[in-house]
Length: 571
Figure 1 (cartoon, rainbow, N blue to C red):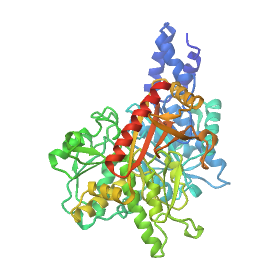
Figure 2: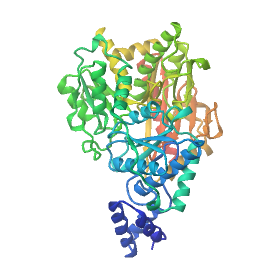
Figure 3: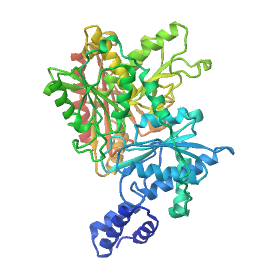
Figure 4: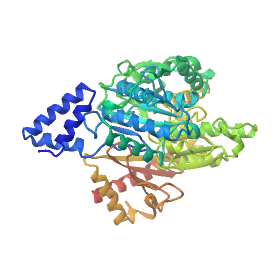
């Protein structure tokens, strides 16, 4: 019999959710009947707990400390409240909470604000389910000390999560170390000492006014008001069963863009995500309905948000692609948007005005572009071309958003920060408006997004990127692969010699230590290997540069073949 039966009974006694109580009660009964599979399941749920880190909490919905549920969320909220009170110096902290359309997001959000209010904090709940960027905006707009967003972004349907932001000097960015460890310690203390039924709760929290959403809409529309070329633009939009469309539609109206043709089957929030196997625009098949809609509408452009609208995907017509449409890579979108931001920053500098993202011009911080170290090195070429600073950071917008003087930041996983003066996080809605502005302006000149990509290559060189993603069921396999690469470092990838390997665990180029290996090849190519921070995946990032798209493509294909051969040798 599982050693965790008594712990499960104690969990059931404090669980306020009838569904997870019944789930766990039935599981315990099966364990007591000698069911080995049930015993293994119970052990998985109770042998550990979901770790609170810089990404907050994220996991599969279900009963037990290694799942996302109301007990775990109550412990997290109480621990976070204690952390905020501890650093408040006698003042009363304010925390704002948002939630998306996933299963139990609204329940977890209301549990949180009731516990925050019960702990004596000023707690504010967003007026309804809204995109993650609206919560990030709200922390700044309301002058809050912190924010919580209940979302699992583009994770599978049975997942949910808990993202934490800090105000004040952190400017509404996601937490970084050591805040994560300090919060985690408070959460663990609550979990060890208290039954969550004894935590004080209060319904004396405030509901954020609609004017907050209106302020986000106005700020986002101002990113790129529609140019003359927007008239007649035929484009398609999908919310991927998420919460983006209501806010996006208001921003489009305010900015003056024509309404898109909607992927109707995916436009309304639905936490079951019925039309996609995986609600991530990067995943194969996720945009098939958008392609179908675009072909029927003879569209010029597709724009997609992920379920919490903090990411942006774009697709364009391409006669060489299957079905006549091609989704741009995150790097292609990031380089276009970075080019746009660099031009604007250079114009502001030449005019003697502070760049839009620099809130503290007196500090002397040079306007900068930033991206994660696994994103395209092309952004550095753009920054250098315009005389701007450039910062490479660890993955995640908690790092990108903190780059000094930032006016634009991105990561290849479809995340873009285009409006740092108001949202210090990735924002798929403001990025969509910026991209629409570029597409519409090009259209007014008789050009397309494909033409913009070619102009970029002509100006800066042909940067090409690819990614190999290995999903595992046993996360220890990832650790084994990383250990093998460290103990027997490769001397070549394919037929190209490795000239240098940077192990970020040892600290490189000022990066905080991280489980990342960066391989530099003799021909200037780059291969980066790292575990995903949010999913059971190992990711390999491939980057090359060529004098033309064809030459870069050939070099990238060779690098991919070599990387796959290397991966097979260490698995």
